[in-house]
Length: 123
View (cartoon, rainbow, N blue to C red):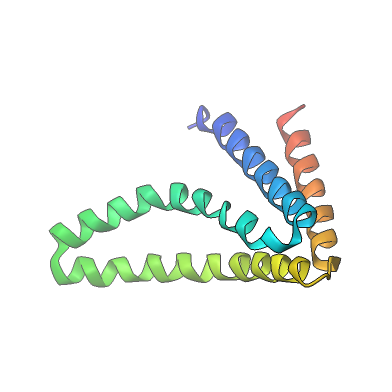
């Protein structure tokens, strides 16, 4: 599994770069800030695709028990995604209405996370 570690680092760094791009774009074009936020959903779709396929197989061959079992991971995923979603929504809505305090905080957080990832990777 050690061959996955460099790939995971590259994906995480790419995701942070995309978040930073969405934040810069939202600040540059405040009226279109929500559209910059929407571009982040491609990452959630890509991350959830293998899980979704496994749930479909479980539901197909597991019957009612498989369907019941598949609800728990889906609910856990929804619970994990909800804070991320609403935080980005409030950041973009704040930028649209002229408040950039959340955006500045997120920008600092993103730069710190990116720096930590690059140090862990050895760049």
